[in-house]
Length: 81
Image (cartoon, rainbow, N blue to C red; front, side, top):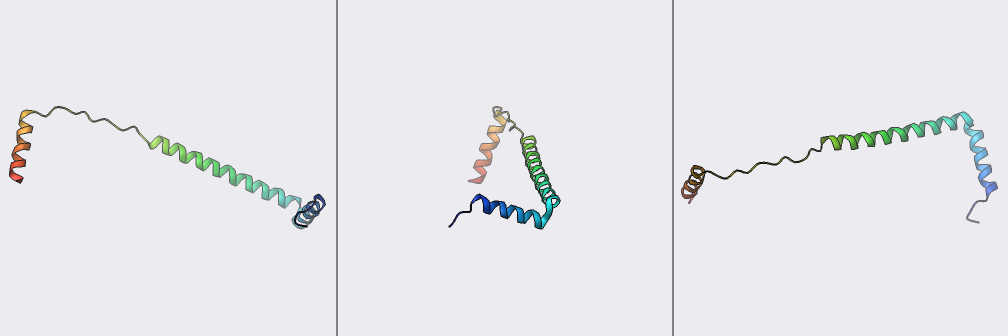
């Protein structure tokens, strides 16, 4: 009682084919396949866009502060206090 046998499934398939016809069912399956292909293509395009836009971080060169810059920082600190 809860599961269908093979004969039940055959009858269901025959009724569906009679109601919709073979052409409509194959057309629907083609539309589903096109939708899946376009979805996969869109996902691949998004991954390519993300990979192309992700640039490696640029390093900033750190140079030692000159004596005049250090004295300016000290003078500014004294003014703030």
